[in-house]
Length: 569
Image (cartoon, rainbow, N blue to C red; front, side, top):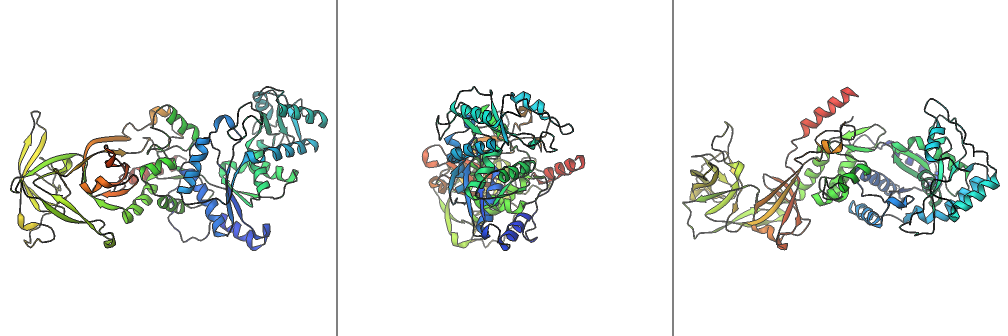
């Protein structure tokens, strides 16, 4: 377990050091080419964002190129929807690929290279079932056993593989395997499967193929065919590197890429497995892949995260080979810093309590000048209407207030931001004893901007004019899981979900300037947090989503969880 590394002065990470040394030595003629190769079987998440940033940024820093290549070799799980979503996410992060490729572009050439392996006597067609292959493979402490088909003749293998290609066999009847070493310490070298029969329509090639290459075969040779110099991937592929190198050494490919691994990004209180994320979507635990509680880039975009904040977070996390579980609060901190600098300020009352200023005339109305940003005068100001009836936050009033409660109490005074000092004179309750309205008085000499009274009060609260307020629905999202590391926690995923991960406030009241806000606009609701317009108020039913709170209330909890996990590791 690690905390986020915020020291950016340590110099280049180990990958950049390798690439720089290769360029200096003239390796690959000084050329740098990377790629981001997602499988189009789901939506990208924050873990993919790390891989995207590494591959695209390193290529850019060394005047190289980065390709976007879809690893579309598993047609039953892939869809054009995912292809388009991935393109959108990469561009949203701020990157543009040098060329768009697909593993399926290379299907004819990959087939030729498989035939070449057979001709060299380094691949064979096997009739063992998937279960039998696993059984024959052995264990980490016991060598595997040769398949009865391992010593087929080259001609027989060529004929069977051609018949596989022609569609003569059922799924699972035959596979093509590399002939390497069934006693290799690395199980990935124990005659791995290279091709299998899949009679499934492909989203690009249709029914042209009924055999498809396995990931290791297609991924390695796609790199080698298109000129990748540095194949950057996460640590789970480290054990696959010997097979990667073996395939390149055996076959006549134009380039010899180098695979380099880095640690994947894991966030507390979330999962990164596409399978688990898909289950959440399929079972209706979330509203979709873009649910704002999901770690997907589309979910983060909908929640109001900025690409600048995500890139900043990835930069702070850094690159290493150490297992990383990063506090979710660290990501939110990057988001908070970006929005604090760039989001305009507005007033919004999420849980309204009506106050009537009885000393203020019913017919009077004023426009209060309010800054759009306290530290950026170039963003100007707007006017906020003020009248006799206002809404304040229900939590800004307490009948029985604790000692250091500096907001409104019976007989107490508070300043209305950009407005007057008011005093609570009477409390109105309903038949059940709930506070429903406050009757107040105001001091006309204390208007903000022209106050010469010299009066001071400890509390300042925000408000919205009841006469001008714009109603909206506000959604408050929290962590999706209630345990720090749900990937490793015991129990069903349903039992690990946070039942309070979404709170919907249907009667929030907003200042009228927000009536014209566009979809995707971000604001700081003063004293509340940062919010994004999901559905414009002009559409008739405005919906705003909280992106992040003003302060990280989870930091202490997360650090305690990290410390506990570290002690148990």
